[in-house]
Amino acid sequence: MNTPRGAVARRVLLGISGGVAAYKACELTRLLVKAGHQVQVAMTEAATRFVGPVTLQALSGRAVALDIWQPLRASGMDHIDLVREADALVVAPASADLLARAACGMGDDLLATLLLARDAVPTLLAPAMNRAMWAHPAVQRNAARLRADGVRLAGPASGEQACGEVGEGRMLEPEALLWEIEALWQPQLLQGLRVLLTAGPTFEPWDAVRGLSNRSSGKMGWALARAAWEAGAEVVLVAGPSALAPPHGVRVVAVETALQMRQAVQDELSGARCDVFIAAAAVADWRPREVQPGKIKKEPGRAPQLPELEANPDILAEVAARGDAPFCVGFAAEAGDLLVNARAKRERKGVPLLVGNLGPQTFGRDDNACVLLDAQGERELPRMPKLDLARRLVQEIASRLPARQG
Ligand code: C5P
Image (cartoon, rainbow, N blue to C red):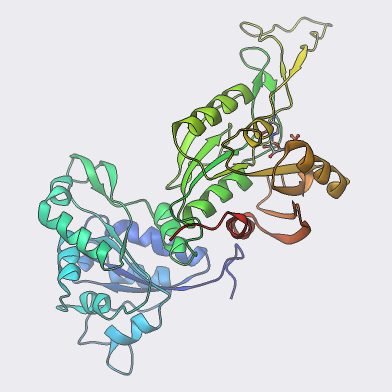
């Protein structure tokens, strides 16, 4: 089955343990359902003191599993059946007590027994507690043991806490948890690699308030950053001005102009090893030679002189020409003659892989279609949601990388 965004719909068994962050589990349930997934909620008794099971029942459309002695399933064995039916087991929030019980393999309530019976079901825990509790050596030991047992821990984040303190211990926001959950099902094709991306438009100022830009929304580049992160890469996104929220798990370097983008890319390349460079940005080809101070005033009946332009550097071509060039992926946003233009562009820029698409049919949209061009030839990828396309592109990139040791 497909979700509204095209991705495969999955069954999520969502455990909720006792903590103030339980209220965020309501929003997480809503987001999972909106993304097309099925959600079966299981709550500890303590969790029901923070949010009512009826709320979760209404949001998930399913009765909430609460008590091992009052099973939902006819078999009477919810602790086995619910986890067998699931594509992922998630606990959000995971309290210090829940972490301790899971780390020790206890089975003293339904949620603990689900964690015991999880077998090969991908499992994610989202810790949430006061910062001093999270820093406690016993909690850290339990977290380390759970990681060693193959459980993915998401967060906690730093910030203001319900208790009024500030520090590490906040549960990740529901949107970030949705990403973490969907990442459980993605193959770790870029594990251990560092991916640098450019995305979005650039803005080239003409005066203090005006400038040159283009219609790029950043959606394709943002989706690629997410897909690379999901595949296990460390991702740095050099982002031109965009209304999109910073992608979870990705370090964002915000820039405005092409010259700033080029500088940021060069800094990243000289700062650390980079394995893949994806240039998804729609870099403005020209910039005003001079930026006028202040705001150019309107004069009745007279339009100002257009600024004199000069060419921006080609960031992708520069990176591809480096002796230590990472695997470079370029984009070509054309208005027509896609194949001819894209072929020429791949040659000119000296990149092993180029993704050609039609600008007017991708800018600002949530879906896209493209053609891949490499030394072997061309291959079309049909129109699909940008996140799905990004996941496909990550597969295509991973399959072209030099074989890795170990
Ligand atoms: O030449 P054109 O702008 O069509 O090339 C598109 C590809 O080159 C994209 O991958 C884009 O990110 C990259 N590019 C760049 N620096 C520029 C212009 C384009 O990195 N100044």
